Image 1: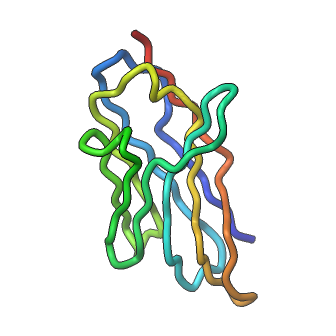
Image 2 (image 1 turned 30 degrees about the vertical axis):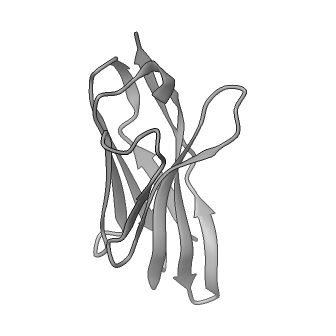
Length: 120
């Protein structure tokens, strides 16, 4: 059974930093794209950043220059380094694995989410 488990969320003051981690476990052959999404209260879930297995990255314009996504393919782990945090970054952050291959083929998986709160 595949699981994505996030960690690293918490409460931080504006201007501070946090680093999120997400580990994928289970009988996984490979993962095409890993990424982070977030959902603030009363808003839809939105893309934060994604990274391919080859290292190509994509960022939302609201976080570009402040957040950095990276991954360790051998550890099936994706990271999100968040710097210069703003109160508007407050949300639940979800890890996503798209094109995660198991013996049953590719599928899309989500973590349970981790809360990030930025105080002003």
